[in-house]
Image (tube, rainbow, N blue to C red; front, side, top):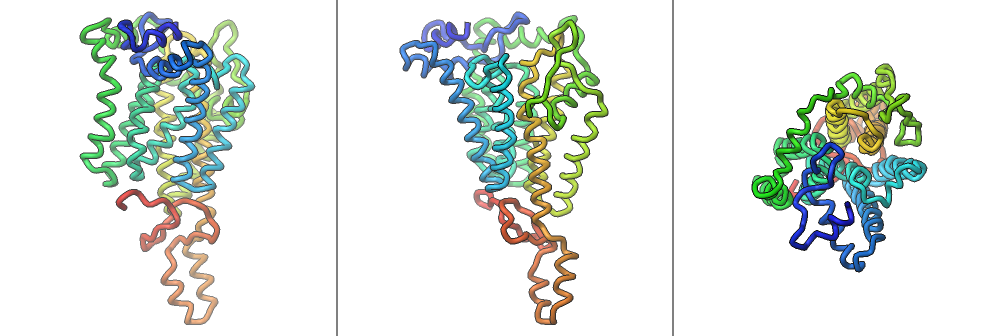
Amino acid sequence: MLEMATADTGSANTRLVGPYSRLGWSHPGPALFWLLAAPYRLSGAASWSLLSTAALVNLASLVGAMVFAWRRGGLVLTALVALGLGSVVASSVVDVDSGMLADPWNPWITVLPTALLILAVVSVWLGDRAALVVTVVVGSFLAQSHVGYGPLVAAMWATAVVGAWRHGVMTRRWLLVGGLLPLVVLWLPPVIDQLFGTGNLWALVGGFGGQDRPLGLGGALEIAARQLDWGGPWMGGVEPNVMGTGSIEGLPLASLVMPVLVFAGAAALATWRRCHDAVRLQAVVAIAAVTGVVAVSRITGDTFDYLLRWWWPVAALWWVSAAWSLWQAAMTVPATATATATSDGDQTNAGDQQAHPAHTRIAGGAGGDCVGGDGAAGRGFSPPGG
């Protein structure tokens, strides 16, 4: 069905809705089909083009994530993101049930773009205007291809707009041109279908009002505990099924304590050292994780692995962001240490002490924006116009 819908793109039978769901409706929009259509036609309608396009989408997502990591935190953050997403990729290769990296199936082709979306939102928050367009395009692709991404995408969009607006790094004109305009263009097809076609959006909304009982918050937290666990599925850990069902088995809620304590401790330390970029990265990842718990809590029926696979990049970035906060904080010398060092010198060093911020970057520290009591920034990226 995926190839048929792709082949119809550009013809009188062009689909205005997304892939068909086992629940009796279609996912919101045709972004996946339209993405696959051009390479499919250029290859002479060869089926292998679908696989190669999926591989290119994943490669582009990895490269895009690295670019945003480099802009936000230089070599250190880029290396951490590479390690985290590299583990996701390696785990996907080992998972012989998925073949995710070259599979155009909508639950698989959307996994790595999730990491790109999160890192793009962080960049929007810090004034990267080009990242706003990436956020809209990638978010639309995810939400149109699989409705399960709807809550995550909505939360990420809201975070990007509120953060950028609050910090004054986006003008109203740019929010309209770089955000609203591509949003309207990308969502016009499903709106046209709703008004003049199958009415899929309304059918989709009605499909979530069935009689099946959702998983609930407790079950969703247990799933999150398994996904966020150090050594979890994103690192090649086991993802066992509940006996007699296809549902992924969670972990006891106590297993959430360690990941949450490490994450919160890293955020607190980075806040104390005024490493604002690192704190914002953790904040965006935390919003993604909390939204993920809410989304999983609304799943009805079995919690199949393909419904949860997008948790892998979220979990990877959970640990990556915590590690970067710890690194940034470690590369910043507290004011007390600076004061002690200068008090042991002669009086001519007093002027040097005043010139140092309350938290001083250690020479050789890479990336980041840890600032001192006088507001002086470190070596971080300066937003456009800032």
